[in-house]
Amino acid sequence: MSSLFDSIGGEAAVDAAVDIFYRKVLADHRISRFFDDVDMEDQINKQKAFLTMAFGGPAKYSGLDMKEGHKHLVARGLNDSHVDAVIELLGGTLKELNVPAELISQVAGIAESVRGQVLGREG
Image (cartoon, rainbow, N blue to C red):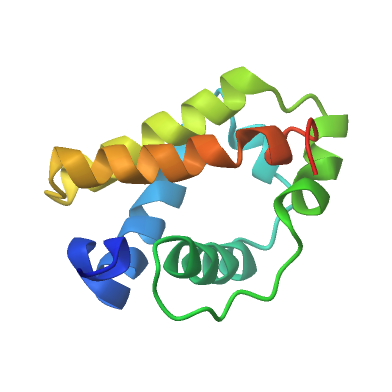
């Protein structure tokens, strides 16, 4: 059985999705402020590595865990509505790239599975 990473199109698909996703994020008034002081090139590279690993591709992610990586954003007000917006934009990005709905659901499930960690509610 192939991984989600392979099913959505591998590295090229993840690269395209992350690039489109961050264009959407930076244009979205609900969440763009959380990226005001972020090195976006570095952020994009970290996100590509993280999603590749989360989707079952080669594990090259060496960043902070979800709780540590988002602690400073929680202190700035990051909450469930912002996570909802991120999941919505990610789903919209994948739909735009013609990823099948059942694979988008799997991606949303992975995103949901780290919600508590991102928001600092679990370790």
